[in-house]
Every structure is written in C-alpha cells, then in structure tokens.
Length: 289
Image (cartoon, rainbow, N blue to C red; front, side):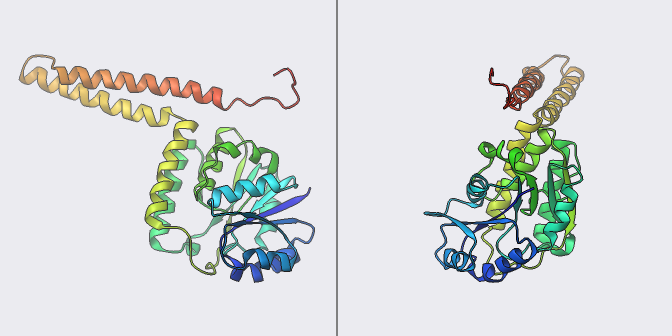
C-alpha cells in the first residue's frame, strides 16, 4: 500500500528542519506532503530544500482546511496525519500502521497522561472523551489527537463535514463511528512541541465542546433530545403533582412543560430519521444511483 504522510504547518520551519529528515529516514517510500497554511516564516523554503512536496495556502485558513487540502493532494491509499511541531514521533507511525493492518479503518495515536501539555488540557480532553464516548457508544481514548492513520478513500467521504479550524479530529472520529467504520487507539508518547502553540485553550476549548454537540446531533440526536425531553417531562409531572395537592388543579405551566417534553422528543425522533438518511452513501459502482 502507498502511504501519504500529511503535515499541516503554520510557521513550523524550526521544527520541520529536524522532523522531515527523520520522516524520510523512517518512511523512505512514503509520499510526504506539507501543507503550508499561510506561514510567514521559512516553512515553504525548508520543505523545498529538503525535497518534500509542499502545498501552500495564500493565507491562513485553519488546521482543518490544511488537512482537507492535504487529503485532496495525496495519492496514497493510506493517509498518516501528524503535527509538524515535533509533538509526534516519526517512529510511532510503524506502530499505528501495524494496528491498522489488523483490519481497522482508522487508528488514532492516543496520548498518555504524561504527554498532556497541562493539567487543564488533561482535564479538558478527559471531559471531551467522556462526552464523545456517550454520544457514540464506543470508548474514545483521545478525541482530539491529530496523529492518526486512516483509509484514504473513507476519509475523503467526510471532507465536506470537516471544519476549517482545530476540531477536525473530533469531527472525523465521530463520523467514522457513525458510519460503522472500525476505529482503534494505540498509546503514544507526545514530546513537548517546538515553538509556540496556535491553540487558545479557552477559545478553542469552547469550540471543541460545541463541535461535540453539533456532531452529536448528526451522530445520534436522540442521545441529546431524549434526556432533555425526559427532564421537561419529569419537571412537568412533579409540578403537576405539587399543584394538584396544593391548589387542586392542573396549571398552565404544567401543560407547557409536558407539551414541551413531547415536542422535544418528536424533534429528536425526526432528527434521528434525517441522520439515518444523511449517512446513506451511494455505491460508487452503481451508476444507476
């Protein structure tokens, strides 16, 4: 199988000077693509001097946009996505590929606790993993890891879903689970990055959390709508019992709460059916569709 290693990069010249020769040494037959996301340093120059393929954005479009550009430019059957800042070790590619060859469609490099940049990120990533595991019904060890090996054809199926920002790992992971593709995790050690991080913990943390719920509505809407419906129903029921024994009547607020619970449940049911239709893919060999 032909391997395409895709590295989104923004002002990562300092790291690429050492990372690219290591990649070439570890995977000499692989296609290496660096997507220069509007860098204003020597990122492109470094890539050209070392002799790897580089695709440049005229301005910064975001990490997810760079990932999509790299996927479109890649010619390999299998994609390896990794950061260009030195946080992912080239030698771990072999470990992920070995797991991939066991029959998985995507293998994610799951960072151990010691690889988290801070306690805040450790807590945040743990929360994301728990919420996403609930949404998908599968244990997710590292939702936001950008180090992964994936089937190229299946990855391209979801390019239209991927956001242009930093939350592409969240989206593609949940999309793969929703489509019924096999996803596995392999524990890795992520060294400290070279240079300054482009992620804002508060801004991008809130964005990641919102993405989980956005994708959750695409993945399994009833897992969002049903608890909300149940909450309104129980509140309405308790309120009805309270007003019945205190005032001896059924109040308008009780009717509103119970009616709202029914409406939310029906919205979730409709959303679930739409989601099922949304993920039905056409058979590329069936020209009649």
